[in-house]
Image: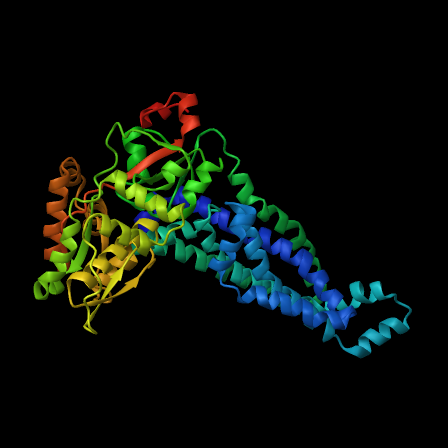
Length: 515
């Protein structure tokens, strides 16, 4: 508990910003949903034939997985607040639309007939009788939609829209439960708070509830403006980074300390960062030095002239028990040792990302070029499970590992690609749910082992010392072996559009100082 409190105090400014962003996303989408769903529900009561269609379409929107919906919206609306708002709006539609329709339909027909008998028009019956009586039910729908949107809004962090999901996804990637709780607890408290407030309003007398609805109509737009107001800071360059980077020992805080330089930060899924910088949504990104999109998008890697980023040499990490009992597995995989340099890995990533070749085909072509390809030797033997994190390079490497094990041992393989970040793959390996996956020495050192700063500074200056340390400590602490490094160093790198770097005369990170 004390560690969580310390983390919250240390990151109070960031947490406050994320909370305001989260509230803004929730209420802007809610405002749009109320604006359309309440009239839609009224229309359905006046034209009963439309009711099944309106409710059916809203119901379909509710069943689409949120990740799939965001993926569909990104090509249409780009990165940032817009696709997040649209997705949240679609999720909020059904409860508000359905409750508006139900609330009005359940008004006692005798009351409605009495109002008509008094000479009221249909509009007067609606506004003075039906809507006031239906307000508790409508408020229940708004209450449900609010709680749903507070939860779903955590996914907005993956597409640069901010919110409390930044800490959650960063914690998952970093094997850091404190970070996860720092995002999850405030999100849960927001959901409980808004649920209780709306529940209190829902139980008020009709006259008081009607006045509260008016106050809500004024307050919602103000809350909805928060994410836009927070993004109007234009004094600094905008930097895109994935949520994991903010919490790493060698991440953004370390970068700020070493370079004495800060950006307006935008958190993005790793797959979206490169698109964001290419399209000008951000000015620079903290990406990966072997990514194929560097060439495709004509980006320029800025020299890390103060050595902020440690070495990230890649190697298979394997359960120690498996290596001891079946050394042929390690022998098969170690054939890759030193064969893939940075340029080669970047070219392999490019083939998948932009030439649209499958990772399996790219892996096979590489092994054939290296004279390592063999047909599958397994004859219904035991199956080894190979995992990968959720980016292209890992998919290619897991396919190479599977091909080598199939070709040089009697094991079959099952590949579980895209398991997520470091925490998921590492925990799965420790628990025996997977047998191996590709990992990086810098990640092993700083995320899983986390030695003190003095030791880190000593180790990262020597790539061989870093590898030997993580190999030794992983054996001792986790019963996991690091096999021989593959040859490339996929370290973090700060990059920007080449034309922008050239126009500013910037070649090294220090050259951005004062931008």
